[in-house]
Length: 114
Length: 112
Image (cartoon, rainbow over all chains, first blue to last red; front, side, top):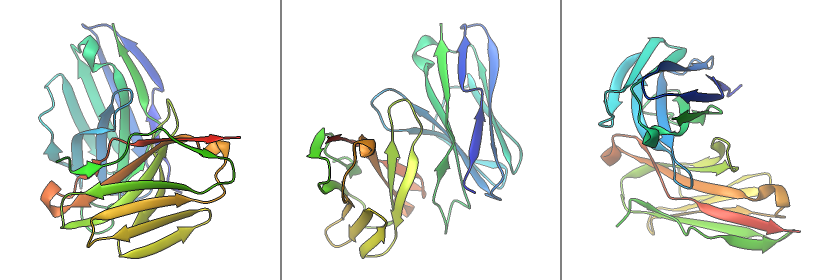
C-alpha cells in the first residue's frame, strides 16, 4: 500500500481566515513533505520533516506553518494568506531522506484564496 | 543551466507507437531518478524509479539511465490515449540535500 491521504480535497478561504490542511500515511515512512504546485509548473518544495522534526524549510512565508504531530500525520496551518497562494498543495512521504527516498504523493488539496 | 531539463512538448504520438521522453540533469553526483505521471488537476503518480546505469522495465514502461551522459529517459511502448499526461522527471542528489528536484515536465499527447 502506497497511499497518502489528504483532506480537504478543496478549500476556499478568505485572506483573514485560519485553516489547516491535513495529510496522513500508514506506510511507516519517516519523512514527510509539503509541496506547492501552480498550474503548468512542477511541484515546489516547501517543508521536509524527518523523524517528526523539521529538517528543511525552503524560506516559506510565516503565514504557512507546518506541524508533525506524529510519524503518520502532517499538518499545514494557513493564516492570512494572499490570493497568489492559491495552488494545489501536495503532501508526500518517503521511507527516509537518505537511502530509500522514493516519494509518494497524496491527491492534494486545491486551495483558492479570495 | 537548469538542474533538471525536459522538453516541455507537447510530444504527440499515434496510438500504439513508442513515446520517448528525455531528461538531462546537471549534477554528476545525482543518485536517484524518478518519473512521475501527472494528469491535469491531479497529483503526481510514481511511474518508475532507477538508480543504476542501464535499463529498467516495468510493463509498457522502460526507464534508461546513462550517468556518463547525465541523461535519463522514459520509453512508453504501445502508447494509449490514457497515457496522455504530463511526465515529470525528478532527481535527488547530495548537492540538493537529497531533495527531489523536478524538471518542468513534458506534455505527452497520444492520438487515437
